[in-house]
Length: 80
Image 1 (cartoon, rainbow, N blue to C red):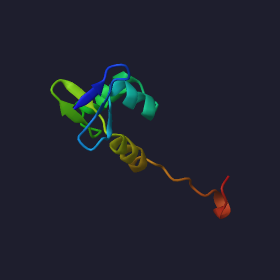
Image 2 (cartoon, rainbow, N blue to C red):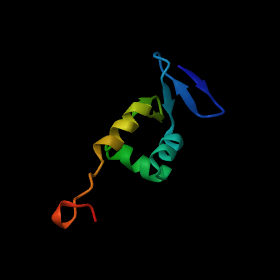
Image 3 (tube, helix red, strand yellow):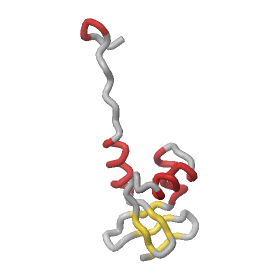
Image 4 (cartoon, rainbow, N blue to C red):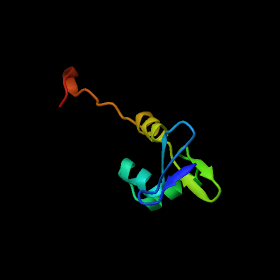
């Protein structure tokens, strides 16, 4: 795996960008501490390469999609 030290982003064999914890936290709008806790609790899909924890962008998108909460219609069937 080639790694770009300036951005902490690697690429896997498919040319897909792998994001480190800070980049994943930024994409999710969370702190690095929160993402580390999610990894420890196995709440999010991640890639472990040696001691490094990395994330595929599609896995982060899938995580967001799985946690979408649809709007509820207000009384009378209209959004309020």
